[in-house]
Amino acid sequence: MEKVDIKKVSRIVIIGGPGTGKSTLSKNLSKVLNIPNYHIDSFNYKDNWVERDKKERDEMVLNILDNEKWIIDGTYRSTLEERLKKSELVIFLDYNTFAKLKGIVLRYINGKGKEKFDIPGCKEKLDFEFIKFTLKWNKNKRKDIFKYLNLENNMYIFPDKTINPTYSIKSLYEDILKEERELPLYEKFIQLEEEKDEDLQEDTIENQKKHLGQMGGIYGLSESQRESINNFNNIKEGEILAVKGPPGTGKTTLIQSIVANEYVKRALKKDEPPLIVASSTNNQAVTNIIESFGKIKRKFKQNNLEERWIENVDSFAIYFPSKNKRKQAKEKNFQYTDNRGNFFAAEIEKEENIKNLKKNL
Image (cartoon, rainbow, N blue to C red; front, side, top):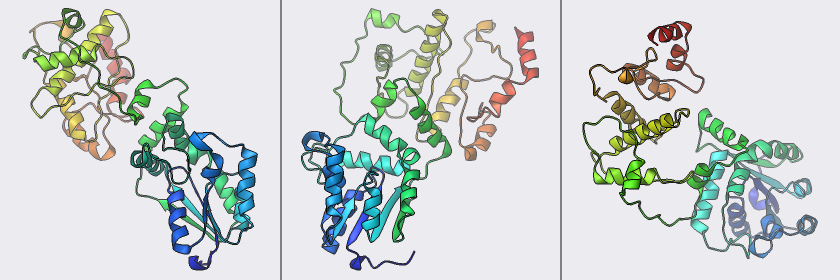
């Protein structure tokens, strides 16, 4: 592709996924080049996000193409081929999924409650359906866009590499998209609308009866720890309980109590044990929890209930470190594995280990 002097260009098409800044770029280029710009979104929506008839929208776009100068932003495929043929320059903002997610979230935060400059009569909004559309865009739309781009010689593709998600995070989002059932906790976590705080549960006898298990009994729970457990035992599926405090205030002990309580609750109902996930933006917070489980002292000198029935299992926790943290996990004798079930998980499943387990039983 030959270099293009953008000052000599009079017809520009800007395309890309949601949250890539197409409208902002279009507006800025319009000011610099003194060329009128058009946002296809403004043709697609009437006031209050009412969708216009697609045929009428496409006619409005096509009517612009014979004008001497224009900048049109939007990826709508129904008119993309005609726009590309008439254009002198195509700019494709080819960003990865995480960059697009960042874009739509920041756009919402900065424009919440305000009218969108590119869609008059519509206030900025963000809902779960649009987030799903953004997550699927690269997989569902991107390949088709490149088929159209073969028609155009003067094309600039701007990839975004500022966010480079790992394979595991990509796999997580792909699994979320495959889920056909509702995911109330995930939807609650990503929503941007503020909610009113619920009233705290009182430390009543009825709430205390729901506290069924305790991990270790060296120290009794403080008033705030009991209050936190009462509230945890009363939250509904998908709800989030936030507990904060400076170091040394008993947050880890609280986690131990909640874990023990959940296990005892399932055992009394003869249900499968719970799957509890501890995650953090840093490894230290997770390993602190794992190490705390290993420090639980036995209450009785001889009691089979305090013994490990499974051979070579020495902790309540299994650790999923990144590749560069595996050596450290091994040095600290953590039970670590990966999403393919290697290392500790593979050792436990070995036939010899299973035989020893049967002997112990």
